[in-house]
Amino acid sequence: MEAVPGGELLEPEVLRSQDGVLRVDLVAEARVTEVAGRRAQVLTYNGTLPGQTWQVRPGDRLEVRLRNELDTATNLHTHGLVVSPQGNGDNPFISIAPGESFDYRIDLPEDHPTGVFWYHPHRHGTVADQLFGGLYGAIIVTGDEVPVSRDRSLIVSDISLTTDGTIAPVSAQEVMMGREGGLPGVSRTRLL
Image (cartoon, rainbow, N blue to C red; front, side):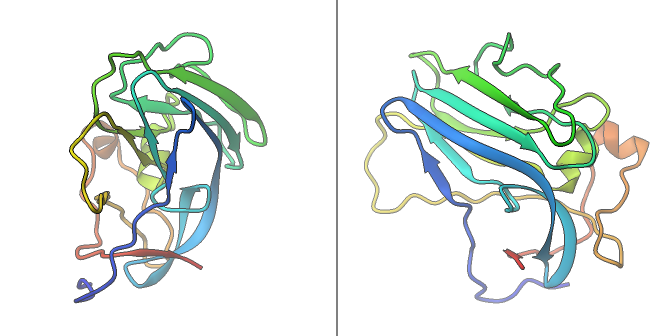
C-alpha cells in the first residue's frame, strides 16, 4: 500500500487540563476503523486510534476513569511521567476486568519536566496484544514555551493486520523485541 499523496494529516483530539486538573473518561474497546484504506478491527481508546492527546502542566492532576469494554483484563500506564506508582496512581499491578471501571489519580510534581510522553495498557501478559492492537495515546506536559501560531502533534504507530482486517497475532519474539508493522505508507486512520 502506498501513502495517499496530499492526504490530510488527522490529529487526535487534544484534551487540556483546566484549573490544574484533567478529567478523562477513557473507554477501552474493540472497534471497526479504516486503516491504510481498508476496514480493520482494532482496539481503541474512546473510539479512536490513536487515543486522544492529553495536555497538562507541571503540578496538574490527571483523573482518569478507565472503563474496560474489552474481552480481557487491562489497566493504564503513563510511560515516562515522573509520578507515583502507588495506590490509584500509575500502578502497573492494577487489573481491571472486562465490564469494570477504575479511577486513577496521577499527580504531577510542580517540577515535572516538560515534554512528550504517552499512555498505554501495562497489564502483565496482555501488554503486547493490547498495545499492538491500538491502545496508546500521547501526553504532552507543557510549560512556559515560546508562543507559536500553531502546535501540532504527529503520532507514528505501527500496526500489522491479517487479510481479513483483524490485528495480526503477536509472536513471542515480537512480545520481547517489538514489531515492524506490515502497512507501509499509512497516512491516516478514520473511524467508520
